[in-house]
Amino acid sequence: MLNPFYILIGSIIFLIYGGLNYYIGLRGWQALFSFIPIFSYKVYWSIFWLLSLSYIFSRLSQKYLPTIIYEGVAVVGAYWLAFMFYFLLVITTFDLLRLLDHFLKVIPLGIKTGLNPAVGFIVFILVAGAVDYGAWNARHPQVKHYDLTIAKQAGPLKQLHVVLVSDIHLGTIVHNDTLTKMVKTVNDLKPDLILLIKFK
Image (cartoon, rainbow, N blue to C red; front, side, top):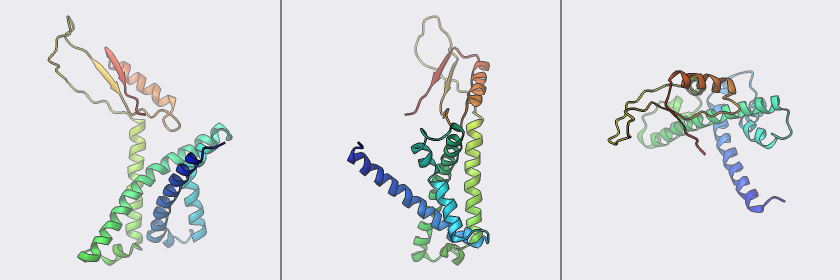
């Protein structure tokens, strides 16, 4: 039997998550998708909720779905979380500026009303670009070199070549082939010591 406390906490989190997504979806409809003929109101919201709830659905149904379907839904959900973060950041900034403009009167009317498809399209492209860059960056780890001098004796040891690996995110999106490339990169550096950072 489920603990009522966990049910309460889960319900609160779900309501907050749903509210934030509704806010994003409403602004997306007002600023861009209402101007695209192929998107009716019902079609838009059906697609939007399928995307925004895909991550939660993948987690709740992991034990029951075939692996290939679960991984596909989980990838869509993971990408949506990234889109959600950037959309919230940009849309909230716009709305705060519109609120300030109530007193300052400096923002053009098209942006002020939130119904400007050009602004909506620019926001969509910027967010898509940021997510795409993040995905590319995750699959192409960067190597940065640092020279550190420590004022401490280490016996006969004069220098130590250390490789520190972090932010691997191995899982549904970052697969073993990426890990294999990372291992080769680390081995090519010929380290004396390898450190792995794990974030909980």
